[in-house]
Length: 148
Length: 172
Image 1 (tube, each protein chain N blue to C red):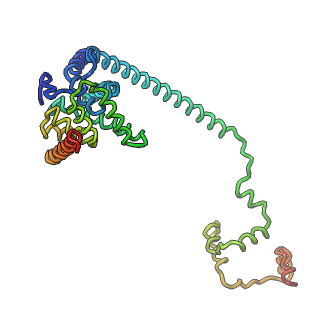
Image 2: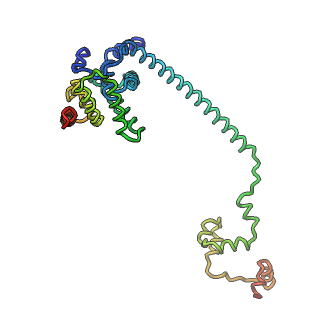
């Protein structure tokens, strides 16, 4: 590349105003100083903001822990809610849904023996006395079914 | 190197290249105040990115590239802000007319008008070759692309300028 003093072999169509270059380098150095000061200031601001953020997060966490440990949760559990339902309501619900016996068996916590009895296609032979049979009919409200 | 020494060296570098950087940018953006802003921006970028400068390349080629890129970006932004790109060209022409002054030769006036008819990048190519007499290798380093492509680009620019000058200086 040509040396600086060989610059403008062709006439420069737009020369700078007189004296422009006398102070240009000083102005540039001043701007660099100012920008570096600003950048450093921004760094400090970010650092303060970060610290404030961490402090806020810590306070929120403490409040959350306090609320969780002291809050008296009075809302009922799902088991309690189901216990409040009548058998008819549960049966109606099961009938109205597409839930299959297999699904119920998957969810329910049956003993093996209970599973075997549910899977039986025929009722077991019962050796009941007439008194015992009456008690069972009364127990399971089967009288209405019997008469219907 | 400690920072005060580095600053002194940098200020010396600014003083060495300030006139050339000014000339590169002024021919592109025409207005002195815009040029002043951009010259400062260029040297601030040079300072901030001094760590990225690779010793194997020429320092002025590197500064020249930053200056050309800043100028092209400035003109792009100016055109984006304006509804009509042609309005910017008219503005640049009016500024060129005013900067050249009444004493300028007619041929110089026409040359500047012709150059302002070129796309900005092609104008930069013309300036590099015609005014700054850079080699095509240097131009490729500054603008990217191949030397062949730049030769073709410069050739087209010269043809367009010749055509403009012929028609404006010898109107039929």
